[in-house]
Length: 295
Image 1: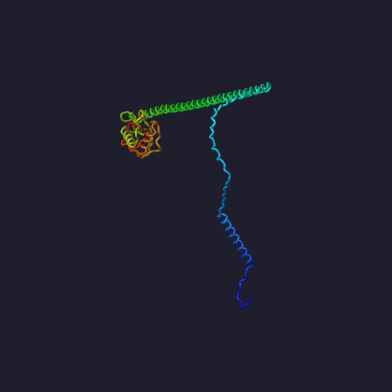
Image 2 (image 1 turned 90 degrees about the vertical axis):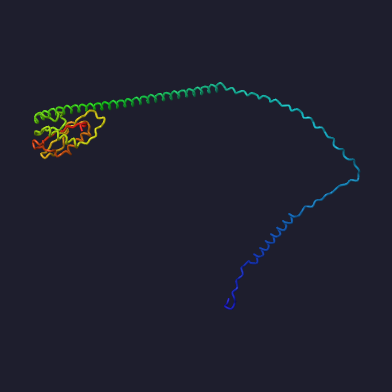
């Protein structure tokens, strides 16, 4: 190829063979369709023929109607009884062996039932014994607890009685000492429920004044179910300026903890205690007695 000659696309090999094959296939398809359609549209031709004879013949006689046979009664056959099959009689040896096996099985079941009953009985006895031991232990614990509580109560009662006896002895000794110091005067009206001086001489009016001062600072709601009117007693040591010398010491409890605490707070709020007008000094020790229902 040169610059003057145009470019020509080369022909593909086998082109005419492919065209021939395609034309042949189309021709075969057209022939197949043509034959099939004609074969379905063709109607088969029918031929009819009549045969005539020159001889004259008589007509065939009409058929005589025949009577239908009467139905015969149906006789039901009685079923024959089946032959009763006799059970085969076992041989003596086989029967004896079966009887032995049956008895052995029954004996085994009876023995198992007895064992089961014995086990159940033993279990019930063990359970009963366990419950009895448990009940006995609980009863022992209850008795021990009751004994401990009773012993505790007895000890508390004994201690309370001892404290009351000691308090009575102490109060008696204190009263005697007070009478000796004050010249036989223990308080207004002789009730012994107000402050008492145990250090230096002080008249009853001063003691009553101290008791009223402490009661005025006592704040306590008396329980409605309180039995009796038990007193509480404190020993208060004072400095020359009327302030407390240490914490007050409880001589006797009223058995009402709230009231005891209220009186203790009232003593603290009442300081400094005033001087005695007659002596011009503050007692070194005072005994405070106060009852909850006397507020």
